[in-house]
Image (cartoon, rainbow, N blue to C red; front, side, top):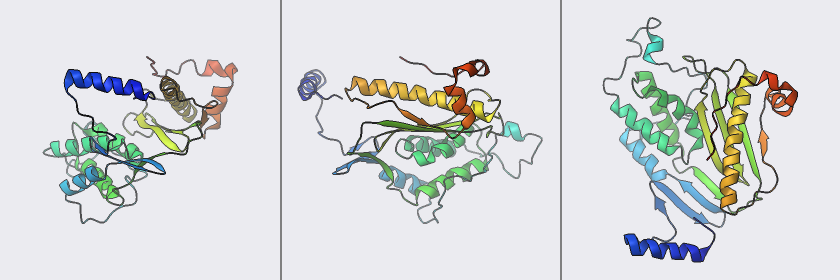
Length: 272
């Protein structure tokens, strides 16, 4: 990628002389992602890929659902259930390969569907020993996708060159490890640029600590994105605004005097 057309042309000529490549011009379909250009911007979707998933699972004529996962769904592994519930109520899948293929496709689908990120990261924890409840939850996501398979990401032509970020944490939501869930999304102008949902690496002792870890992780992503945009000579106007709904975490981040309360918090952030 680059903003120098002459340099891009010279690079194409060099690659063609070495590898005999073919210039396909502006892409319309690449690795399952449909790319459509209009006056509003560039639209990215995976409609064809979603329809293939719906067809493979046999849910083409099913009734769609409006949410990808239940709000208070507590999915657990076999080790956690040992001695606490009957295996006949929620048996292990005899052949986990179907579940693994389905969740793998859903993980790839999160590139253009951030609305299923939380549900998919929850199901991806049970790839080795999935149970029937896990498969039912995965099929519920497919039913949700059937509601609007053409939904995707719009990279808007309108851009004020300002970056904003939103982050949140679900405190101790994992019933097995009691670890919290980090979630954030970053916008560049009106376009969604980056998003992620992931379980935190350590146990947080309070909701403020969980939110503080989430803020730190989001800032790491912001710094990386601003460096990438700088390399592409795309100037970001002003500082990046980070939104968080936890007053205690905001006070910890804003007041250096409270450093003693946060020195035990380790955040896994690496820069290259």
